[in-house]
Length: 242
Ligand code: ZN
Image (cartoon, rainbow, N blue to C red):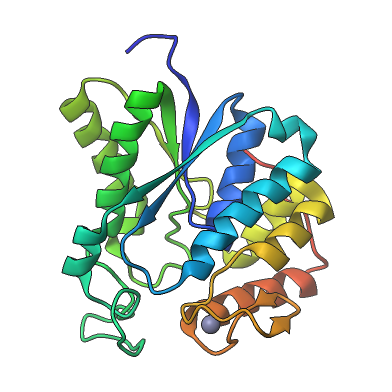
């Protein structure tokens, strides 16, 4: 590892969490690039959200625009085919016998991080930033900080350089994630993420709610709506980034 390696690669899906992570990284690192994964999701709307969010950040936050570099989309449809869950196949979202939503693709974050690390190495970027969160976590074992710690060790051993995995949302509730967004970019960032980030599992954007666009009924919309309401009823506080 050399000191010339710096900057961050953000795992960016165009959702609420990874959008806040991107803003967090832009405030912290002088060079930031983004990576997205096409694993055969049903919704082109997620890919569109990534583009709109990046452009919105560049337009509204000039100090971040100079730091934001390239966007990379990696095709991992072969992995998505193994998952074969509600996100990749036409199957209803339900809770499985393991207590996990059927949208869960087993080990997804392990695959994402391995691809991201290989790309970061090629790009000369040091840290990986992701929106994994174990607070509101829906039982996903690959979102735990312990998993991230183990992954850091595996990547360092396997690639002979350090890959710090930064997870700024790990201990935050969904309401606190909105507070962090406000702390990073004020009401302007809140409005950008509220309107343009996409979370709904069903890919719906025809109805606008106070918390953004979505079907309003799927588990992802429910989580997002509850977080927004908790944050608003707490007086829309701002949380300083740590
Ligand atoms: Zn929804």
